[in-house]
Image 1 (spheres, rainbow, N blue to C red):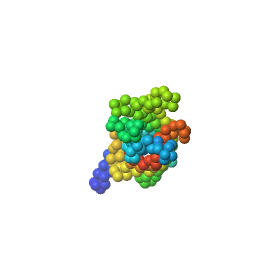
Image 2: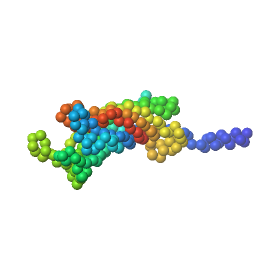
Image 3: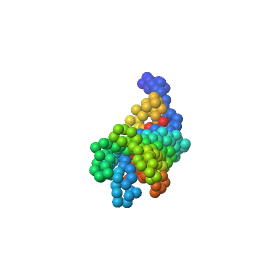
Image 4: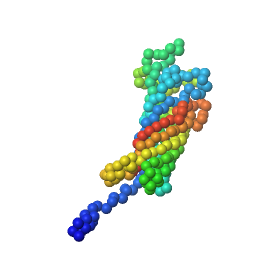
Length: 238
């Protein structure tokens, strides 16, 4: 009898299970490879980008902040993102040989994003997987630096001088799968929610197809990736 009374007293004294904090949005950080498809416009007859920068893929880092418009049978988010990418090489002399000085192509991509994440399985059934899809409007700010670090200047079609800098618009589609890390330690996830307001943490992998050529303009640089872009990162839902 005494044991039963002690157990009842301890149960009454124990704190109630903490409900999940309100959900407002999410933040993510991602890393991917990237290689602009600039040489595509030459149809294989020339490859100025490959001649200067080689055939390798540079590392692009991007972050995005989202606002959740709907949370229920999945989540609908809208957000904005930005990133950075750069690639160094050697320019070409009129003779066709590589110059000693380096040159650099640098790109800052910015995005307006709408996406759907099917996280109902993780939230309601405890299955820690959340497939998702996104559509993004893209604007890639770009510039070319000389070996001295200044923006390159070139002769345009009219014979005047123009800076090697500009912006190219387009869009992209993304398909991915996120793994909810709360599954591995739910007590730690509850503590993080209580202390920081982060409801869930996901490790994600996805593939993106980009079309960044001023909506297929023949007079624009094609800064689309030359293939499907594979990326991975962390998503924090708060």
